[in-house]
Image 1 (cartoon, rainbow, N blue to C red):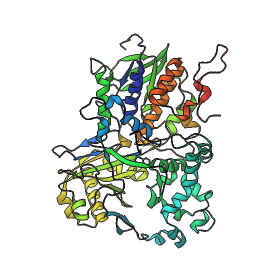
Image 2: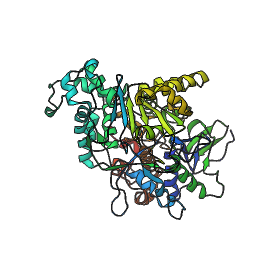
Image 3: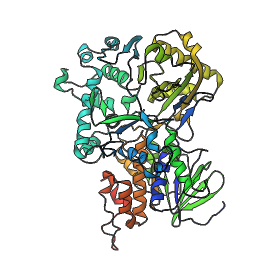
Image 4: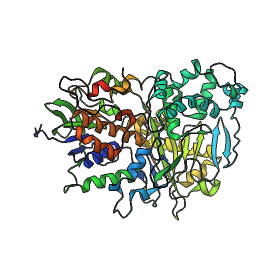
Length: 575
Ligand code: PHE
């Protein structure tokens, strides 16, 4: 131990978008901080892989890649919506004013749905090329999956919408899209113990207009819905996740809510992290002082008037407060035995479920999907191991369009399975992965496998579950996780100096905005528990409020301990 003297700074753990955003907020309030980052770069899961020797657009986003932003009003301000805080960050003056290319100018359209037609669906060995107008896909042999014809007539999309819409509407109408609090959320929590599958099996009754029998769904029907709607095993996760996902995507089946515009960053998502990093580094003379890379945390413990953080390189620092954005699976590998966590919190670290996710990026010689099939942007879907193919949205109008395809984007069990070929790191499995992915692409597009082999240049695959710095791609909760386990981490540890942030600790997890929301809550919690009540008004003015939290009393408790703010009395949702 180097035994440095206690620094009155705030320690931020992790230089992903949540940690960087925390730094921007503290910087704006003139509060001293330092970020410890385990890797040698910033951005975390804002991670863009650029293929060497490729053109300007020969990259893909291994992590976050697409952003359903709210629309802007006539003054250029983002309207309310689930992703508003991200929109406001993109507009933040310090990332725009006086810069040659302001951050806001790096935002380009993302084609969630293909701009021109021609994407594919390939299920049960049947292929359908989706036209832009009036698609009429076949039922892909649903009868052979054991589904009765009336359900096939109703359709997966309408059934999925029928399940989600009542909850989604309640959550939205209650208090609007900016928050997840109120009666709608209460109703959601009363049903949080259901997996989506259990809800469909034991509670859900189809609405009359679907013209289905007034009974719960059978397993074959549920499996069929899962196959076409999401990924394998997805329906075993919380019903709540399905509803939150629909709210974020602003659609379920053919129903939409909220007005969004799909966007991405020109140059990849790491652009956002780069702008934030650059600004933070510009605020001090020593560019390494505020963001300290290659600092992997070994233990976090309570100290007199602070938290001590020791790192694997042998140093230890005591911070007045620590805001951790470390993913929960990694947090559990750190020695927290003296960190003052309560039993509910350690249980939450162990139990809150993450979603596995993998991507396989392939650089080809040409944009064959455009030249052969007319595809620009959008996705193809299949039950084959690759599950989802994502065509590039960036550079589509440039002279050097991207020849990189996300040949596979998988979630849940599909990601676990394909990930077994990725994480081994052995050459022979690389060959096997490449062969599998190209064979699947050939089947999905109905083209000769040999053509794809001829087109192939280079592959880059990533399994977030086996990345030692994440241990999972993003939080994706199991049944009941949102109730008491989640809320145990929206409050600090015993001495109220360790605060939990990161995308997991948000009702918008699996999105960048979730990391921002939770960082906001952690800074608010820090201001309150460090007694800086005088700074809260300014904090609200600069960084907005969040209805989940702004309704808490902001005054310190009186001397007899009554009234005021004590984080432990105000655990969101804990009664
Ligand atoms: N935001 C990610 C995506 O758009 C991950 C995600 C997957 C979020 C599924 C919600 C549901 O792919």
